[in-house]
Amino acid sequence: MSKINIFQEKTETFDKVGIHRAEVNKAIGSLNDLRLKYPFDENLREIEWLDQDRLYKVSPDETGEFFQLLEGYLKPLGFLTLNNSNVYRNARLQIKDFKNLLRIAVDDRKSLSEKIDAPWERIGGLGQDKLLAKQIIFCYNYGQGTVLPVFNNQHLRHFVNRVSDSYFGQTKYFSLGQEYEHYTKKLIATKNNLAVTKVWDTTYFARFLYQTYPPPDSEQATIDASGNRKVGRVISDEQLELQGFMKLLGDLQAQKKISGEQFRENRELWMRQPTERVGLMQRLKRLLNS
Image (cartoon, rainbow, N blue to C red; front, side):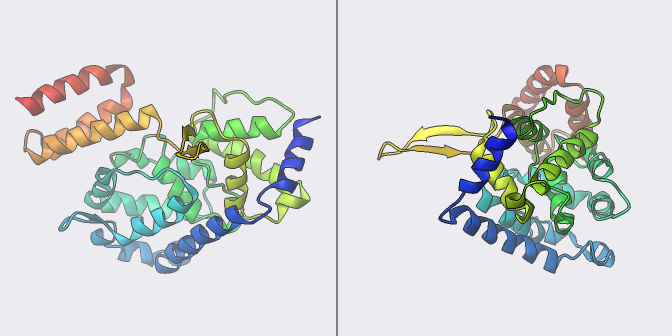
């Protein structure tokens, strides 16, 4: 049996009791709250009016309303959130850059690849796989039905190869954004070519993909007290390393052992030269402990 036929059979038996639909509806409710309170795509002036405290409040340290609403959409679905206040804090510190990137994210004249390939790396933590960038871009392009809440390029390629009878290898010559758009278009086309899935919103379709074809690096099996297998999404090793590195920089800056400029220089070195990361971490740890 072809992959397409298997795919169709799986869609027809998915979520018969509606558990996934209920969770998706809850997430979409939070997404609508975000778009209602911050209608950046409808009125660009709303971006100009965005203040720092709505991103991250310094006293007391807490996530601001904008990122809280963003996480309100992601968490019910089990999608990875950053769990790292440094990224939000950096967006606050560089709010002018963040606003410029928001304008690109909601610009209908820009392609999906152009939005992702925008210079998100100017803000510390946003350049690593463009995770937060992809999440924001999805939220403000959701109504067009041309984006999916799948924020990992490897996951997109995995899903395409599970539902397509053709094999698609890694798109070596694409930028991150071009690769993301390439696989997104193929999955959206697959969704819209089948009567069952054509009427599904993209969040529900992504839920189906993750539940039916879990990527190898996206699940962790545990056994609960009753002997049932439980699966939960886990963060990748590379993302954990980045979180640890950003925390180290934050601790050094808090102890006034590095300046804001040195924070940015070390962050950029981490992004540009992966082979130097071990030595960089060792040097900074010695500085922290000195």
